[in-house]
Amino acid sequence: MKMGYRIYIFFIAAFMGFSSCESAKEEVNVYSGRHYQADEELFRQFTASTGIEVNLIKGDSDQLINRMLVEGENTPADVFITADVGRLTRAVDEGILSPISDIEILERVPAHLRHPESYWVGLMKRARIVVYHRERVNPTELSTYENLTDKKWQGRLLVRSSQSHYNQSLMASMIAANGADSAELWAAGLVRNMAQSPRGNDRDQVKAIAAGIGDIAIINTYYLGLLLRSSNEEERRIASEMGLFFPNQQGRGAHINVSGLGLSAHAHNEDNAIRLIRFLLQDDSQAYLSASNFEYPVVSSALMPDLLNEWGQFKGDTLNISELGGLLPEAMFIFDRVGWP
Ligand code: FE
Image (tube, rainbow, N blue to C red; front, side, top):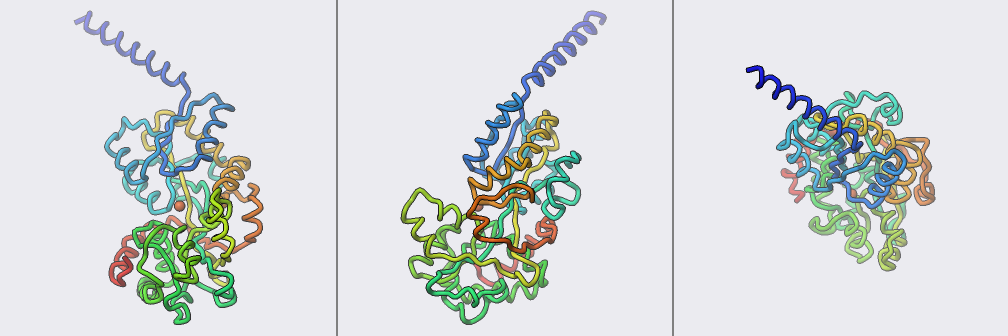
């Protein structure tokens, strides 16, 4: 009995030795649905300046959420990163995140770009806007998302499938702004005006304009930036034919979405996770990501690349985007009912 007790103590001590050894290694484990070289370069810079190793696991955002669910309390994940508010909402609903209480982090990110209970914060933002062919469309013809249902756009509008999280969040924003009935009429009007049945990604919509299939397309801002600064000459040529239009500038502003991140509910390296999140929200980090990917910084004091400055100031919707998460099921019903594949 006494011997057993001693062995028990030994194991406790050994375990504590092991765990303090583990934390002495100074690491942070990141599960990320973002696939940018720039993110990895920033992680390297973080390691260089703090000595904290960043172990990165990249994957599809939904699969990473599933993995964290299966791993439960034993998940190595300290930080979860994804693009689109829908995935962030799912992560909150599944209980894999815990609120961030670090004031320095919360003060960096505008209130409408983070969860009201701080389960996630925005990392970078993007607007879902209209690109148009500069020779075939006069930008004075453009005004609002609502106006895209006008007959003048019949057979001229390009937009990808409703499987796109970006379109789902856009639809949720239409429901938030105008109500579900009105959003459904809008969606039906858009389907009527489509130049072709939705196919491809945002970049492909721009290429379809260049190919003469349509004249305007709904895409995220950074895809035009990535085409304009592409290493492929043909992509640069295509992009140079396009103009960029921010809708709803007289009203609520252009629809905004975020890449965002949260702290794992079972983070084993919480202090390091907080340090990493603070680092990603520094002006320099934000400016670096913006210059590399053409997303907009969430931190207003961060510098933007020339291209984004050329696109100019615009009004973005200031609705707390976490509210869009709850509207996504309704958005999916609408896509179904109006036959937006
Ligand atoms: Fe994207």
